[in-house]
Every structure is written in structure tokens, then in C-alpha cells.
Image: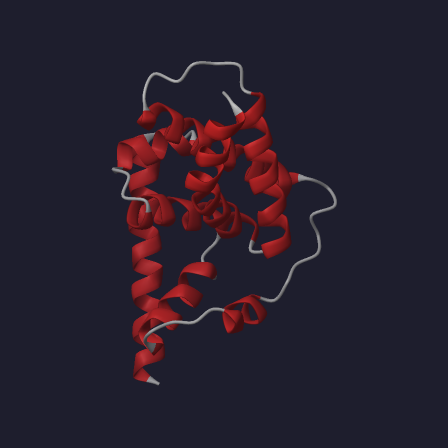
Length: 159
């Protein structure tokens, strides 16, 4: 992959990688590090990708793996408060803000499937392959995440 092609690919995938990483680690600095690691692996990858979709799947798979590796590391004990990051974002409606905070409060095993399914538009089968889990597990996690979000958002609305 030449430098020009890599620059185009880096710009194309950087935001997606960042969002996947942030949903996993909930930390902007760590998410940026993961973006750099994934892009470095892409630059060094000595393989031909069959199609644009193959490249996209490869990048997402590497991003998920790098995120998991970081979260499982021994030094990953510090965290940035979610509210601190949420304050830096701008939402068009209060409902969008509430939904974002509710998704970010989900356990990590639910956040990435929700992101891949709803934000990236992957069917459950493909999202399961990207996460390295069974389709039935992906469907169960999506269902449980939706139930948790529904309960949390309706509880907040009733207050």
C-alpha cells in the first residue's frame, strides 16, 4: 500500500476506529492510541484485500481486538469520568444526550454490539463475526442491551 493510498484509508477509517475504541475503553486518550495502533497495523499489513468491504471488516476486527487487548491489560485501571467527555460533545436534542449516556453506561459486552449494529449498520451475523462471538450470542446481547436501554430511559423519563 502506497503512502497516498494509506493516507486516504487512514482518513476513511480513523473515525470508525475511534468510535469502536471509545465504546470499549470509554477514554478519549486510549481510543486515540488504539486508532494509531490499528492504522500502523494497516500500514504494515502485507496483504491484498479482496474488496473494499474486506478491508473495512479487517480494520474493524483489528480495532475490536486492539480495544480488548487494552482493556484486559494490567495497567488499565484508570478512567476518565463519562460526564467529563459527554460535556465536550454537542447534541441537537436532550434525548440524544440521554441516549448517548445510557449507551455508554452499558457493560462493555453490550456497547460494541450496539455500536456495530445500529451505528455502523452491520447485520447481527456480521457484527458477531467482527466481535468473534456466535450469532445467537450477538442477538442475545443486542436484545439485553435494548431492554436495559429501554428500562433506563423510561425510568429517567418518569422522574
